[in-house]
Length: 115
Image 1 (cartoon, helix red, strand yellow):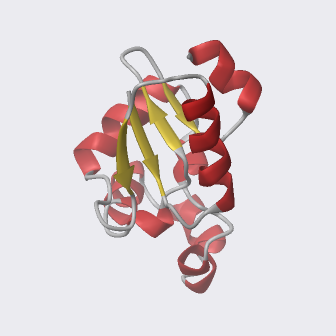
Image 2 (cartoon, helix red, strand yellow):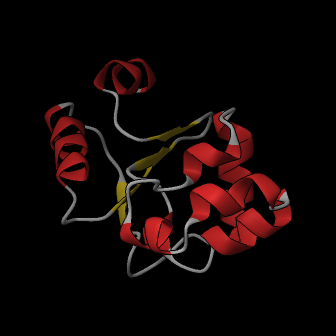
């Protein structure tokens, strides 16, 4: 499994503590230092089954500063993927990537089902 997080985020800390408590084996990736590529985001989006908007960190400073809530509805998917790939802080986290699915955000019940 790949665990993509921002180590200073409290939700990411909870998710990582959950993974550790479950004895899960995972590779950790700091989203700020190693942001996902456009190709990765496309793959993860397809595996997640979620709307693309769910991949945006809507409470983040960059999202709000760029007024993306107003811009996203008129942007194409290609433009949205390209934008997400520019800065890991635009991407919602944590992200858990398994062989079969991708989880975005931490919901303990959902993560329990997956692990």
